[in-house]
Length: 186
Image (tube, rainbow, N blue to C red; front, side):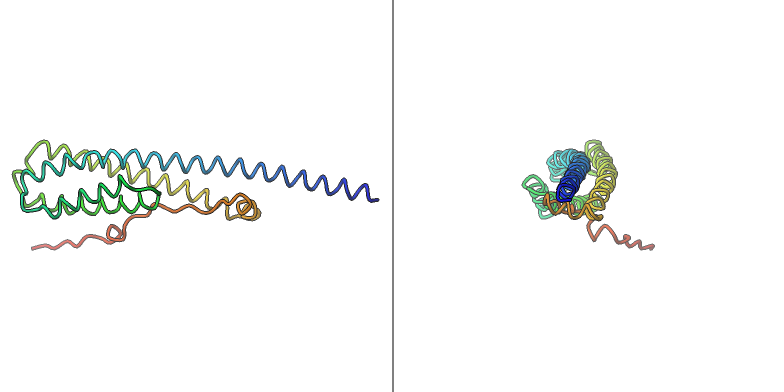
């Protein structure tokens, strides 16, 4: 009788170990997909950050009275370059998006700048990068959702606790981007 109990306990432990291995491998696979999608965003963010000095130089040549805004653009870029975590990168990306919007709004006041082909090219490249960032942000958030759902489902939440896995943050848009812009007709 005791022998059957020992065999039963060993079988249960083996099944638990197999389940633990399966969970871990699936979790690592899902985390790798999240990391890959974050890497794709980071490539686009880096490309955008690399364009900023050229943009600032171009605007500075035409808009000499906008030094405060240009300083904020450089500050946001430096914040991105110094970011150490995903949350800091998300925060700095939001800051860059915000100050670039202000910079382009200011450019409307300078007709010579708006007509400059170099400025138009930079603006077009930034617009294209923003679209790519939005696309990759959606992909990243989808992979984070899949990962987070996986590690909170029972019994995976128990296994996640064993391995110290926790939920990952979504890359959400800044609150200022969520509201519709005001349009005034004259």
